[in-house]
Image (cartoon, rainbow, N blue to C red):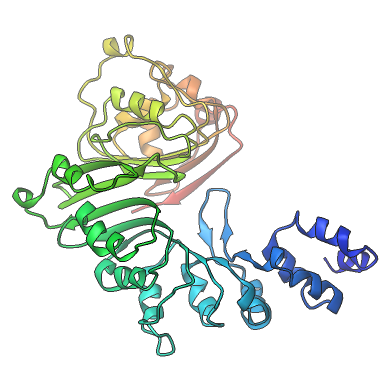
Length: 422
């Protein structure tokens, strides 16, 4: 960037604006702010400072903090100069405390909290120099997204939202652990009734109860009734019981669904069309039958990554049945994770009579299970789909010598790795 910046000095301001507008604001500020007064004057424009996303995201859509040197420079040099210009800020859990403590961001209108670790959020709330009663009147849009379970819905999240009385848009993606289901009535009483200007509420919430008494758990029909006062939304809900792990779950979301991932889908999945979703996980203590996977493929037509967890054998399978099954095509699938599964689900995806996998797919599987399902890498029914696998992650209790049959069975394999499990 240094050589690039020297060449930039010779360009007129109008051209610099055109060039800079095509670049990432965070990278731009990090690389060029402080080089000279002319560039600083341009970079201070609201076009480049109004909206900042201070996170990194990987190709698999995981969220990470900025690199240490970049975060240091923003917190020590850049944010102190432009905090009053920021109107839209997106941060993640590990770095948000440092970022928030730089200044009060007096003109902030939109705030996104992604990949939240609740311990960090609670620690931030308890910081002595933060007034937890101060109203956040400037905020118009707020997003709170976390894949981690939270035990602080009542004591932290609800009070935080009460401070944002002028919100017009709210996005919530939460997994809540409470002694009761957080349903539509709770959302009304805890949140909506305290946000009189709210006109756009997108949510995807899993409410979980551990060590439950099934006689005290309401049905899905009961849950649906609590959303009758949500006139601007179609709300989909699903109630599950998992006796082996001793928890009950109520999952509900506003539809159409806008997230890119859909987690812990069970046999009670209500269906629908989810064009935005690229990644899903499947989990149940009851077996998934072939018809379930047909439903999944139809609901998620652009699915790229699938993780499955189910140790229950399919109870509707035989060689004769396989001849009459509809073959499922996964046109966009790039990653398949089958580490915690019964052999039947490896067959479900590798049998060419059940599934058509795309080329260049990545497979994660326990080595001994794969060896057993493929009959020591000789089985014809699994050969066609195995030939499409380009990367394989093998898990097992020890290192294994990969035979000649293994390499012949996966002729297009470009890489593999072993991971020891005990």
